[in-house]
Every structure is written in structure tokens, then in C-alpha cells.
Length: 140
Image 1 (cartoon, rainbow, N blue to C red):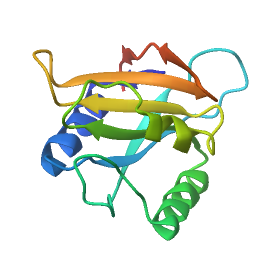
Image 2: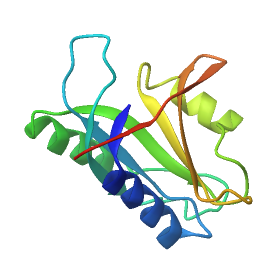
Image 3: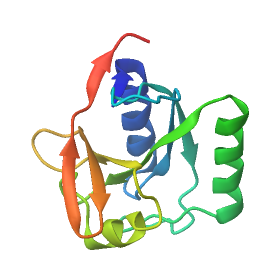
């Protein structure tokens, strides 16, 4: 995914504001029909209804509203993001299970734990397979 530093900073700020609980939300991208990386254009924070440092949950109505707003802007869902406040930014088994409902969508995780924190990583999850994908910074 191509993403501007300002959008990465929004993800990190949201994660920091919600700590010690996990944050969550979605990232909208420009529509693409090629194999070129998607270009992120906006971050849409959501409320973690679990209010937990160990997991996130998004109210279905809120998520549908975010997806509708993205669609109304002529954009597409590019990524679901959340934070890990106690572990490295790598998908947990809970994340992997949840990703089964979202094929082809990237999973961005903001890690707030460890010496390199904050650390932002993105993954494609296909069944039990987890593959890290590059996040390339770009101009807005």
C-alpha cells in the first residue's frame, strides 16, 4: 500500500489516544484495476466497542456507515487497522480468524510495544497464511 506519512501519523495518533486499549478503523484507497499498489487517501477511525487491550470489535452499524461513506466518496476499503498495545504488530490468531470475512483486504497493525514502537506493519491474511506487505510512504 502507498500511504502518506500524514495518514500513518493519524494511525499512530489514534492508537496512542486509545492506549492502553486497542484502537480500530479502516483505510480508504483509490480504486485500482491493475496490480499496482493501492494508494491510501483517508483514515476512518472506529470505536472499539470491546474497550480492551487484548482485542477490538466494531459495531456492525458503525462499520456499515464507514463503508458507505467510503463508497460515497468513490473510494474502496483498502485496509482494516488496529493496534497491539502489549505485543508486536503481527496478527494474532483472533486477527487471523476475523480476517476470513475480509478476503483481499490488508490488515494494518500499529504496535505500541517494544523498543521500536510505534511500529506500523501491514499484512494480507488468506486462511492460515499471513504475508507481510510493504507500506510505502508517498506524497499526499
